[in-house]
Image (cartoon, rainbow, N blue to C red; front, side, top):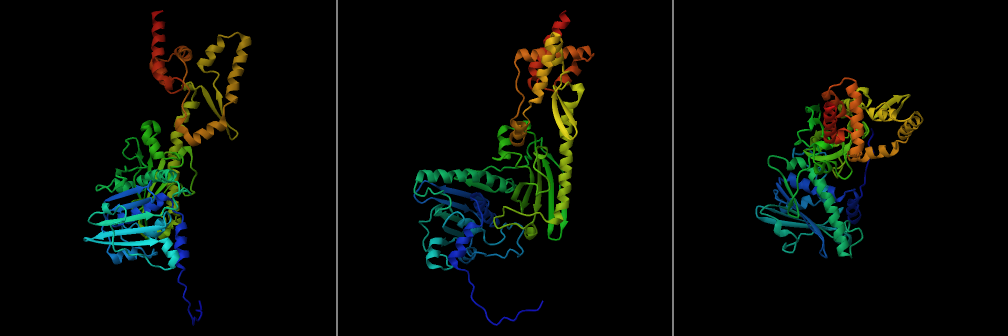
Length: 497
């Protein structure tokens, strides 16, 4: 390409006020902003991070204090400079930064005044970005205070470490800047939502042999493992490794336990506010730090079949450009070179899920198991139809006069034709674990048990075979203790006769 001759140049230094205000709108939420600050603390070797919030005072603030290595004044000023690092530069393995923008852009997204105090080797340095001061002066200049006593939470800083302080929280008040009680309520709600995010994003650091301790207003946060690895019912596949030019991609698949195999608290904790249907998929980690989760990268749809599937994908920070990791470290794009491998992982997951569901579904279509409902698949459609030959129905129908028998069969068919398909689909897609069989009263259960026993004993089934068949279908399965009691009483009565 022929080069154009350049004889003149003009100063194009960015307008300070315009650019620094623009940094506020990169798209951070409170949880991604605090996570970005914690990234810096981890990179600085911190083992303890304390988040302090003061929401009820006239000047509310959020402070994040760590016990990392701290910075000299020269290093602090460099850290306060927007774009302090080249994203293309090689980084140490534990370095969670990328653009050198995180401290500033994350902070400005939530506040108009950022104060950073750092202590190293007994020396304390502080620097302040105040956007109102920048707007007034239109200068790229941080303030360097001489005294630190009036800086909130300064007393929590140890012999070494860094304090990041957010004041003028204009982005967190939802317009309630003059209503202290409502403002505090809004900020506290957002802090509460942030807690789960931190427990998830940094869970592997919190589970290390020398665990990272994150405290929120002096309360230690507990790691949230999305793979439930401590639960013995979790199924984990062998780890795979994909070696590429810029490093290795590690992949491991997990199937978390069914909701009946863990406590309700743990189930809801892992599922989060959007539930397990939205929590399935790939969990992308960069240096053990969760970047993205709850997505299949467009390789398949989120469905009930794969609801319990989670895939851990680990990448090194040397692959940032390949995965297009954004400034917030909360989104990424799947490189083409990795797509084929992950497709094979999904195909394996789908095959396993279909086998599991087919095995469960077999109980519904196997006539030997006396299902109340038949599953009929034909002409590309699936229908569910009551099994009129089930002993509970057939026995009662036989006891009716011929003129009533036809009406009874028609009523059963009407129940089948009125199955609320749309409502069931909506419930299964959103809260499948909350759908349970309806309970039947003692008289209804007794009638069903006796009718079924009569048919199966007539077919020369022994009592163990009968129990095995009945235990697999409702309403007997969901009321098995009562069913066993009625079976025993019925058998005893027959023997006495």
